[in-house]
Image (cartoon, rainbow, N blue to C red; front, side, top):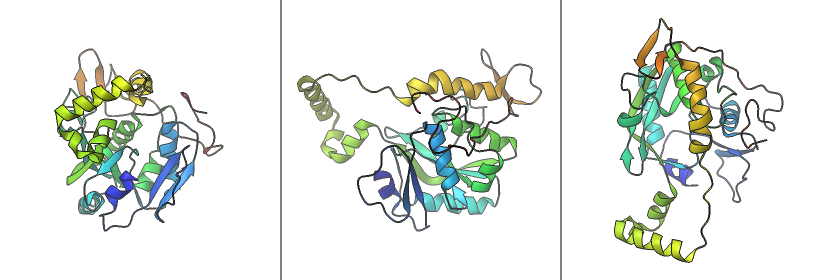
Length: 270
């Protein structure tokens, strides 16, 4: 419950929905709900969005933690914008580094391409209006597609001041649990000893390498990158033009068997 605990300092009431095939083995707080589903990750996120009860929604993975009062700051910024189509995002931290201004773009190496959020707070009815997640995504990059579609209808993105979300790696989790491991030399010695005495294991493939790079990112680009375009944000040699209008119609998830059967490309899921 690291992610829930990181949000406990917020004053604004919130509901947290977990969706997946690993039910919690502990009693969850009243504002936490678990929905069992063996469907693919992108569909699980859409399930969470559809079953949420609030006026505003925000997506994030369970490997993240938030800075103190992050939700309060996001909500304050959202109200200040007074815009139905607003997106308010935390700044993104990975392995102790704020990567928001370095990588927070559609093309991370092209600063003239649109800014991309790290799990933006937005109106649920606007999410529904644009069709939610396209069912052709398996696991990743659907959030960039949502942001681009928000821009397409006139949406705006703002990064809230002093609100951060951090993606935790296994190494970062250990360092938080055992602060002595923050010393690089001690961590290196402990890691060396662990690998010496433990049986070598093949680490599970990460979603990014298994589905993100090879499948979901090319799919995203097929929706937004072309050649003969009249309206585009920028052009990158060897890639093409980044369109201001989606090049293919959204294919939303259907309600039939929504919780039990993956729709569109399934990956390794049912």
